[in-house]
Amino acid sequence: MKATLEEVEVFLAVVDTGSLTSAAEHLGQPVSTTSRLLARLEDKLQTTLLQRTTRRLHLTDEGCGFAKDARRIMESVRIAEDRLMERRGRLSGPLHVDAASPFMLHVLVPLMPAYRAQHPEVELVLHSNEGFIDLLERRVDLAIRIGELKDSTLHSRLLGHSRVRLVASPGYLSRQGVPEDTEALQRNHELIGFTQPDVLNLWPLPGSDGNLLRIEPTLLSCNGETIRELAIKGMGIACLSDFMTARDIADGRLVEVLPQLAIPRTKPVNAVYYKQSAVSGRIASMVGYLAEAMRAPEALWAAERGH
Picture 1 (cartoon, helix red, strand yellow):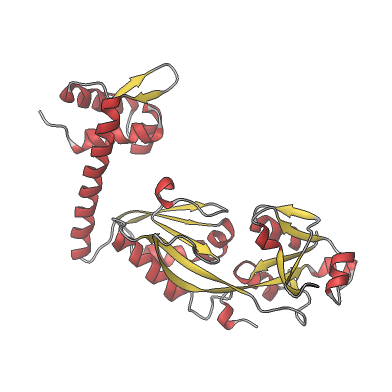
Picture 2 (cartoon, rainbow, N blue to C red; picture 1 turned 90 degrees about the horizontal axis):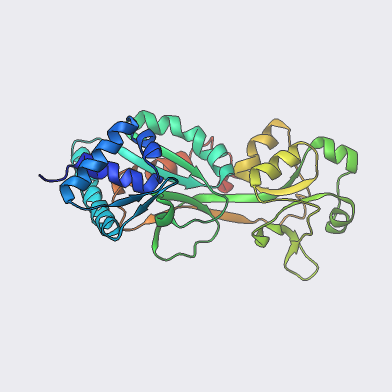
């Protein structure tokens, strides 16, 4: 008797989640069903794929080899299903999208309802990571990256540019005063910066060495959304992208600082993915949708419409 796709799917789910319970939750079925299907697969193959201990499961040598082959089989099945659905004019299946949390919250999430209305059978899985990730390692299909691209193995499409500018709350400036130059900025004010990467602490102002001003933060965070909230709460002056702050500026929660000295500085916003991705139809639909949506007039973050 040959192994079924259901049994193979259960096996891979156990491998990926690390336990029968987690695999059952992922597949939406009872643990007893997951256990029975895994046992039946091992019985058909007449080998032990997973060694069970009281705490976790470990792949045997045979299990490692079978897992690699099984992934290729399941991927081929998904490709065949995708192509059939595309020929019928419909897209379906999972699409894993990754972006830094500020971009996810301020740009992607507001755009997702309209995308789902167009492609209701695509299963969106949204991930937030503050740094660049390995798409293959994290099993991400599409990532939005802000800044210059370095990985030549990735396919990319430029979605737009976002300008960075200095911002602070009206309350903070009323309390601390409005800086008139970079010297006053550094001497008299709380500067909210990033723990990493350090390039984010280069502000679009002229430094004494002729380059961009490198600030010494008095308050730091690794997360842009945290820095935005600190600025809104009157904790200091921050340098953030328009896609995060355009609405705050429009609504009066933040105001621009030192616009007369600012050196216009924008960052490219790219959609990136591996060229040989098996979910090309879903990726293409999302990239095309984002590119069109971000050209719309209401896309306040777009630098092309900025100052």
